[in-house]
Image (cartoon, rainbow, N blue to C red; front, side):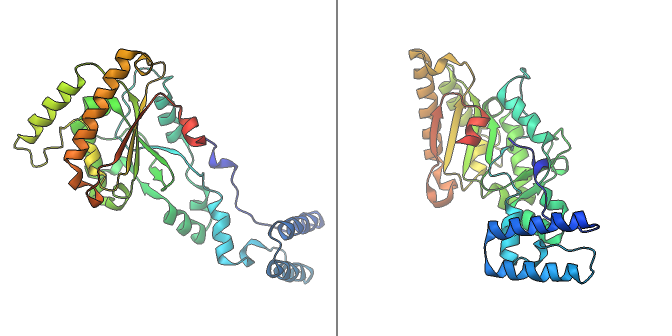
Length: 298
């Protein structure tokens, strides 16, 4: 995933004859790239203004608004991995999910947020910015960088979080939804990382679901394993990706266990499909390990 630091807003400034030559070169490049009569006319006007004695100019500001917005759009990464859970439970710092989590928190926010009002408005129109440390959930997120996401990003959670901390994950996503319902309600695809299985998983999951549904909880899905996916009404697809070097995906016994796990999840979602838009349960896909980079390139 590339850093946004390489993206720069186009502008020009003249303070000497050398700057004038550089500006002319930039103008010729813009003409050949865009190749419109309108832009050529605007270029001639800008050069005339320079010859009249002005000290600064920018060809960019004379471009049509829709063209400028396209330029700002090109400063956004096309696709990024965005973790939407409250934490990543990992013991191996070299794990691909841990690396992606660290990389996300080091990533710069879109440069267009800081150039001018037009660029900032366009960036905010394409991105959701959520300050995770301000989310009113019992579990607090450890990290300074806000969540910054757009529709084309890959949204992911950890399978082990779903299994071990379903109530924490549910509380976290519910808290986001309280103030940013449009964001959660617009997510159509979810990546579940580090999926693994054991022969007793279907029984454990079934017992957990029955216990939660018969409890006095206001929301019985709060402590339900996989219950947090019910908070995403627009979900169309959930992809469960395996762990790196997990033999379950190649051995007969392992594949059987994974098939049983998948069957349980499909049945679970089918039973509760009225909670999804149009009453259609999301498609469930199981696949062997893929790195985040492979997901970005795919």
